[in-house]
Image (cartoon, rainbow, N blue to C red; front, side, top):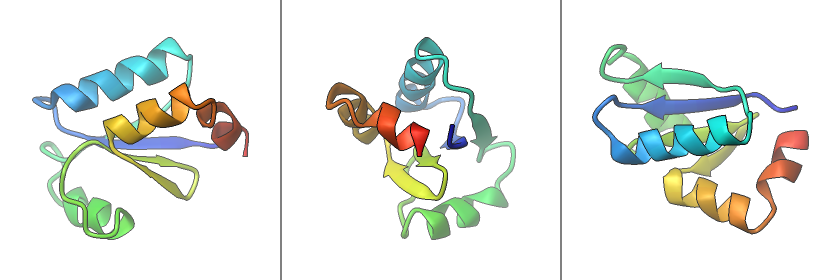
Amino acid sequence: MQSVEIYTSPTCGFCHAAKRLLNKKGIPFAEIDILRQPDRRLEMMTRANGRRSVPQIFVGETHVGGCDDLFDLDMNGELDSLLAG
């Protein structure tokens, strides 16, 4: 299974929704809280092609995007195959 990383903020409802979906599906993920680790924001923006909003989600080296993108992948049945590599 590919690794999953999600850049978040504790006050972000979309971040909580994305994490709930990952938890519901039993997908382990590494969370990077950009409020607690502000030096990681530039890293996130670089990896996400300049996107500044959270969440920013990565499966392996693939930039999934935000919460809506994650839910779209799941609804279209593409998330599981992306996770499988």
